[in-house]
Amino acid sequence: MLALAACGTEETGAGGSRSNSADSAEAQSGAAFTKMLNQVAQQCPPSAAPEPPPSGPAEPLPSGATAPSDAIEPIAPTAGPEVELNARDWCASNLHEERITQALWDLADPTPTKVRKILNDLGYIDERIHDVKQSGTTTRFFLDLRDQGGRLCLDGSAAGEQTVVDKCVAPATGPFTPGERQL
Image (cartoon, rainbow, N blue to C red; front, top):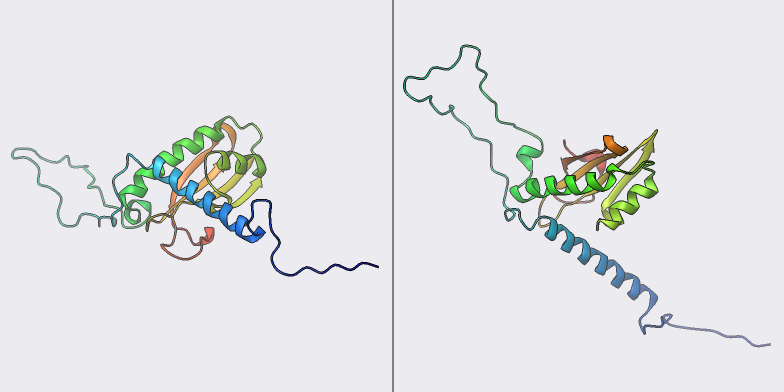
């Protein structure tokens, strides 16, 4: 009878341990994800804290001009993405929304598997894709796009020509929880 015993870490063909190659693959996908985020946002302004809404009275009308009696003075937003996303995230959100919507628009049967594959093909990694669930002919999903201190997330609904992708705001730190996002 022959008995074999092994100690230590199992080696892979590349000379590293299996756990090291898994960590390396995860680091590479994370680096590729960050690169994709930067490419999408390359035309956007650099990150900066969101600007507070303007306060004080509205600009006066030019001399001789009168406001119509039924004029409604616009009110600056006090909550939501308009206030809480920085300029880079606001700009990047529009670009992400457009590229994802275009990729999902012609998907006739948007199952969670098909939606996830399209998102992966666009460069979004599984660790940042959340709550992919189908309801009838629609598949909902969330993307955590927080990067460089930003708070950007996307709330998507894949339904062929009725596909909608909207920006949302995630907590600045901690794990992404779709239930905690702010719209």
